[in-house]
Every structure is written in structure tokens, then in C-alpha cells.
Image (cartoon, rainbow, N blue to C red):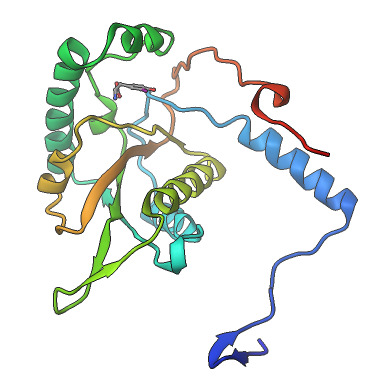
Length: 227
Ligand code: IYR
């Protein structure tokens, strides 16, 4: 790898591909077909997943772009049964309150096609919970704060990469957002610069897993081309 200094900072040649138009078309079609099969799943199998698989998923998530390359994220990976039970209990407590008192009629109506409720058994059944924390700022050894940039955008992108990696490994996931989520900070004993962002159970699907029959919007409904 040929290294070159620009104003004293190291650069290397871009090592990615630079394919012809047909190859781009083929790859774009294949990836669309593959990604279009990804679904949010709530019915998990308790079948174990190799720890190294999960490690690779997290490594892949962390290849996402981030503001000033600060990588402002922490992925907490929970397989411990006691911790999963604690997280389920705390999540269900919040969710019960949300479904009964906090969510609007319109919201509850919108959720009917998903048939969700406050019960979250998948938080104990799934072999792994990945709890993604965003780092509002960095803290060095001296306790000094350092700014992070575009934190929500960066962590959202990392979560997108994570979901894609999970799908590519033949696993399923759910982007779960119990609200409020601060119980996760306490249970997982996270430092003051971290805020819970998403709770993602990961595992194999149950043999009898069902998902809602949904349609994705057409290209015309999601895009405008200014040719
Ligand atoms: N967080 C709740 C409610 C919920 C909200 C949305 I927006 C969803 O797309 C799905 C569920 C829950 O997890 O049940």
C-alpha cells in the first residue's frame, strides 16, 4: 500500500472496485433483490448464534461513515440471561405505560397492521440483544469532553449497516425502540456521554415466524429525478 503525505497527513490509494456499467447494473439488481427480502421479525428462535458472527456484525456496523470519522457509537452485546430478563422487564414496564396512556389514538391505529403490544418476549428468546448507544460527546482519560458531529446521522447509518450485515449472515433482527429508553443506561451501567439509540434483538427466526404482509412504496412514490 503506497502511502503519501498531504500536509503531513497520510493518504493511501482507494482500494475499492471501479467496475464497468454492466457490472454495476448486475450488482445493483442483485443487492436490491437481496435487501428486499429483509424483514423486521418479532418471532425469534432461541437457537444459539456463534459469538464470532456477532463480532463481525458489529465490525461491519462500524465501517459506516461518521462525522469527522469520530465513530460516535458503542454496541453493547447482551447474551447474559439475567441481563436479558432485566431488560425485558424494564422495557415491558415502559411499553405497558406507552400502549395504555402515552401513545395517541392515531399511533395505535397506525400500529394495528403490525399487531404489536406491550409484551416483548423476544427480548429473552433472542440469543443476543445489541443495544446501540450514541456518544453525544467523547470523554478522554482526564474526563475532558470532545465534540462529536452529526451523531444521530452517524449512528443511524451504523445501524443501517448493522441490519444489512445481520441479513447477510442469514439472521433476523428487530429495530426496537422502547420509550423512554434511559433504563438501558442504568442496567448496562453506561457512562454519562452515551445515550441509548436502538435496541436490536438478533437471532435466527422461529420456524413458524410470521411477518405482516406489507408493500414497499414504488420508486415513483419515493423519488424525484432531475435529469
Ligand atoms: N415501541 C413500541 C411501539 C411501536 C412503535 C412503532 I413507530 C413501531 O413501528 C412499532 C412499535 C413497540 O415496540 O411495541
